[in-house]
Image 1 (cartoon, one colour):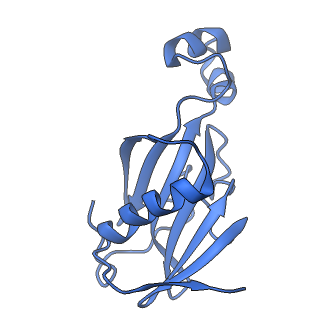
Image 2 (tube, helix red, strand yellow; image 1 turned 45 degrees about the horizontal axis):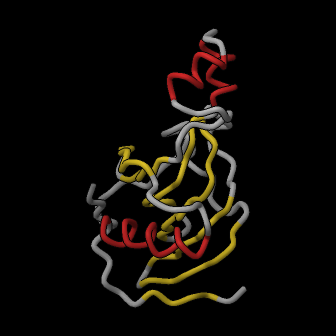
Length: 152
């Protein structure tokens, strides 16, 4: 997915029920050209949806508006069971897990689209995920500006 920040419409909180709400649980902030970038741990979904458990989100803001988000999400099998009527044990077999969360997947949101990028190939640790997610975010917006950490 490519997101042209000069032409793309910003993401609205109601565009996708699984989109991370920006400004919640921020662990790090960055600046890249005109973009403010927030790295968030366990942000709530903007739509209040609980089918997806958001582990981490990297959100690019332009003038305070969400232009692109990369997030690590797991399907919450308990919520899925409650909404679908399928027993949790059956969902656990289907998703190949004994826990209540499906395998963590990487997603990107931008310009009115949501794209699955696949399973996360590493532990869900901040130091490993941040550069991995940042590469996807900056590449998707074709940002070449220097990434500068912002102190709070």
